[in-house]
Image (tube, rainbow, N blue to C red; front, side, top):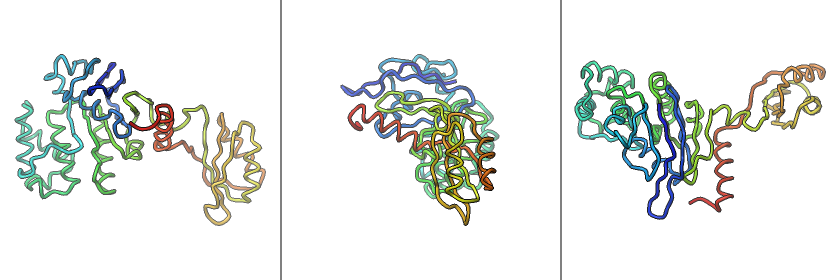
Length: 316
């Protein structure tokens, strides 16, 4: 659905993008990450046709954004970090204006009604935009991006400035949109990316630093499995039993979780769940919790960026 091929972009002597390539397949929700100055905004501006590249190509559903921008842009709905709202208009008048501006050919009333319902702004349609909360303004901005039913949605920091309850609502909304649209989501809220996205691309110093499925990159990406346990019994006895299991690389104590119960993480190079049950049973202990404990996206991000900065001598 989206193909980014060998993009390069310079600002004078500064190389903003250095031959980057990635794909987003139909129905994917892709998280696009990177520190400030990494090239995220430049990439998204090129994808949406707001900026040209020095070399390379972007295809939207097979249509080149450079060779046929008008046709490619029909396939894109874009929500920038600051939504392009006219604050003195009502929500209804604004959406009708954007409907005409985008030259949408669908039945106007039915189409706008459906979009307002999908982003839950029906109750504020007749209110002036400047009087709306930040959360509602974000939803109105998202509604304009949905006009025309574009197959691709590009969302730049959609949760910025929202309170925790609004962030949860926005997350649910993006997940729903992902059922019908291909989505690229840029955000600094890494926990939201991990909860929302199927795949991620991390860019740093204008290059792709990591790309792939979220669970693969944060879970067993280094060939090991980490399991979190809570065991009822004697802490040191359980610790010794876990360390003695064949295939265990390391065991970490997490302390007492409740009276008489202790947490551990166990790292191994193979599936040792059955061996854990047997080892703990021999100590007369009880396993109260056993679950995968992959690294967080924050851990992965910091590891990659720190490693890159060691190689380049710091942030640019």
